[in-house]
Length: 248
Image 1: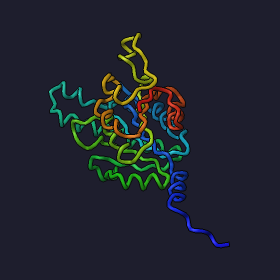
Image 2 (image 1 turned 60 degrees about the vertical axis):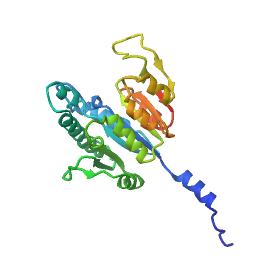
Image 3 (image 1 turned 60 degrees about the horizontal axis):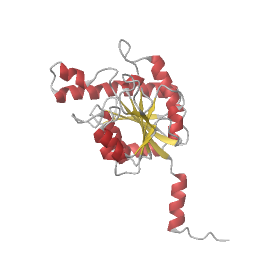
Image 4 (image 1 turned 90 degrees about the horizontal axis):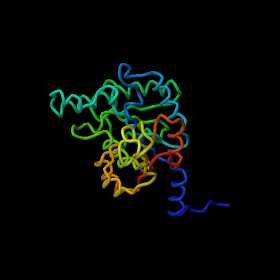
């Protein structure tokens, strides 16, 4: 019996079934270390184990760099704003190289891109190359923010999510999600389980960058804010179950 031609609608449905979910994971610098131990091997090992636990999805990681250097702290010491931001971006490259090494030790194939031009250790970032790596089953790390000063790594993660057609953007930080105030300082701060993008922009929570929220507001990308230090949270979020705050 001859095979009948596949209709366009059937081909589209097949593509939907075979397409792997794309997860962009923005990781706070605090997940790598801090203080006198900015690159803490135990923390990095824990982080890589959490990432490795995600199955059936393509992962794009956008590291922060606050464990090594915060651009804002240099600005307060008299540094030019652009220069301090570039130094902050370089801090994300430090974290990214360490993360790539740690993921390789877990047996994960990984491709390291950077929005800053550092050809000796990274690949110049472009969306098509990143998607090609994801289709090949590789984990992707994107360092260097957007490559431009005056832009946060939250906004860089939002931009990558939009460019790569991500399904979920996860912000992995040290708090359980979005609150009405800083929960570490104000114990009476109210926790929000769900928010619309409009509500989140209006509330302007400290844990989320308003520009990133505005960028995502016209997309279908789900934005989850969760505690990286609670084991299993990344796996739950990648599977579509939000263990923190869901913004959509």
